[in-house]
Image (tube, rainbow, N blue to C red; front, side):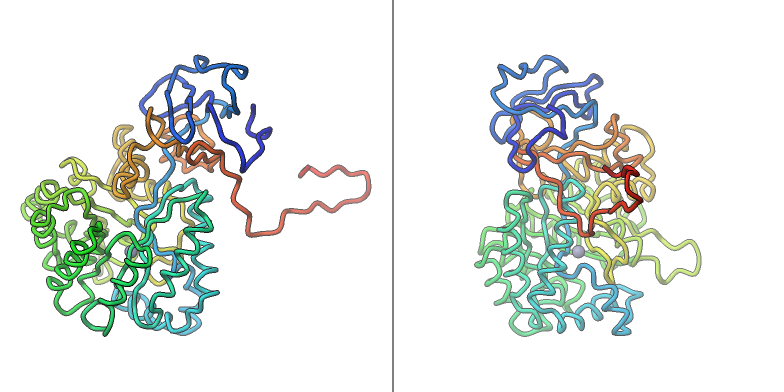
Length: 438
Ligand SMILES: [Zn+2]
């Protein structure tokens, strides 16, 4: 059965035929059982249509990868760029981006927040993402409105994407009254992860301790925006690693940005990388934002800001890449395509060989899946069948060319194409002139 013949949206699949998957030279068939991958066999070895007992999708030799997993995104403050400019608010540094966005929060309504967050979620889905961790702003101006909207979206899109929510105190815990209580309430309502942002509070060490205390009380993972600076003195890696070890949270703590690690001399960075590896702390780089907001003080050769991806991965640390923000004060561009982040990180981090480009693919698929606790991930027996077929044949072309998505399978079902936001093209001509669009 070809792609065009399938009843989209309802299609439970028993097999994906004629696929090219990472690390396997020859084409394969991927046999599915329910929502899981049962086996990956040489092309032609899967049961034929009669024995299969269900639908198959022939992807015609296309690359089939693990579905993309977004480890770090802000749906609730996406698409604020025009509003920011209309209000004349500055956004050329991290501090200005945070302050200006905080002022815009006073304009958030439920409908507005839902419309922007849903648009961002659809952007991820359109680019083959079937799971995402979203940081939800917890602050007095919006209270728990963001949590409520994200929970609505998580339910509405439950068949399409796993949405894991982080209770995120972007504007601090110490400076604003009631944020600690709001974080607790957010966890009670359904946020899964405790977020943190130590660099916005007067006492960053105490902020980190407050976040870990909350995580310990609720038995939840932790995900920090840890440091976001070109100044190595603003790193809080040692403190986070010590708390992670003390609480036995190996594998349940992630840190985002970590740009100060890139600013350290190698002799200072090496023991921090070893400590992260020993504590089992994952690292999430946000290359678009890190490039955009770092290096602002330099008058020549500005630093790139993106953390030490190569050394972190070589130390055995789980390293992932995220979109972070879409078209706002923190990142003025973005379409939700994680392959663009892999492409960008490859240029910034000097990943040029096939083996290095395979690592970039890992950073947007299996590595973030590990951070979100999704279990085995990709075209491998026993994994949940969340797979994406791309308009290319060699899986490595995914990073080199950033090709379009051809099809997305989630939990063994072929997803319908996401709705387009624009009207379909219409051909107008004199009678009898056939439309090339048909
Ligand atoms: Zn972020």
